[in-house]
Image 1 (cartoon, rainbow, N blue to C red):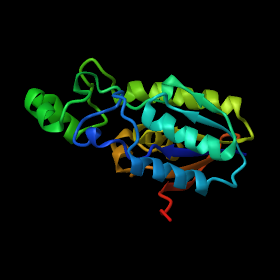
Image 2: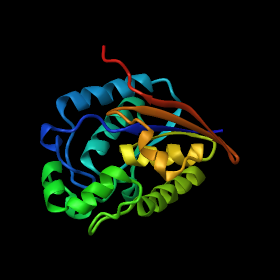
Image 3: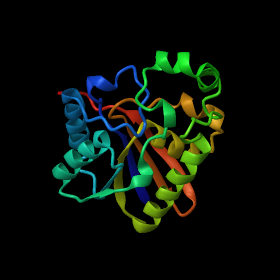
Image 4: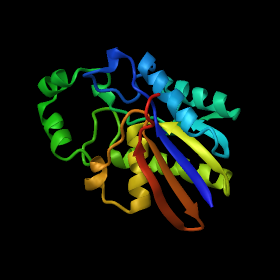
Length: 201
């Protein structure tokens, strides 16, 4: 049995609010750091052997909080980043709607089918995320690991585990500091927990 704790990063700084950000690098807010401390506390008794992380600050900072609590190394993987939104990166949503009305409409109506200008499509992102996950599965077979990344990464992995079509991907809630648990044994895969957010104490 190999177990994967899939963790979305905590709340980012206020500058990120109302903006499109995938590769745009925002740090965690103070609240986001507290959220990740709660995640670390929740996982404190898990036999986690390694903590994998996206290189983006909002994920890496949280991964380091968890790794410090568990005394486990952080392994950074570039292919665990969020969607590359291309020309939309960093723009307020109302500005995107005004400047790119057709693409914005498609994004809102059929988000799994849009190709972001000078960025990725969902199919592009899926290839790299599932490739990264396959390598982690091979490297850590029989172990328990944590992967701290992004809502989009978690949705792709959960949808893959559940054999969901792309059209259902965005029905999967992934809150800040949400925790998911996938278990794999040979080719059998089960989702044991989804989008659990530890309560603050």
